[in-house]
Length: 100
Image (cartoon, rainbow, N blue to C red; front, side, top):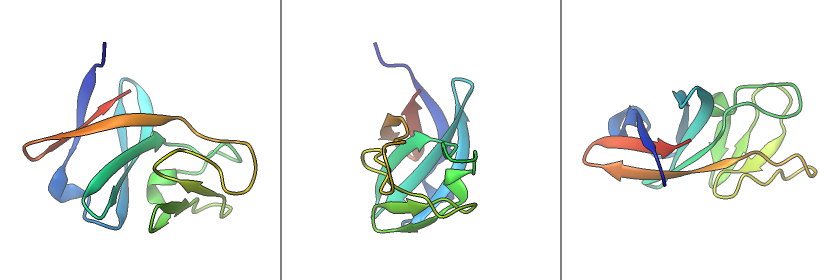
């Protein structure tokens, strides 16, 4: 059964941006793509960069440390096979919740 945890207010993550949050003791990267929220494991598998601080272009986030790119809708790495976990997200009123 899903256990959704509030991680942010909708207003804290404007469209086209990301944010580092925590849910269930895990570092989470939360993104807003044109009003739809997505959540990934928060650290890049390359060297542990904070994905939530990366630049978001469309559905691709670029790690701010070494430019690895991930699709925020799937967690797929665009450079190789080091994908990151993707978490379910829902919006309840003004709150963003993640199942982590």
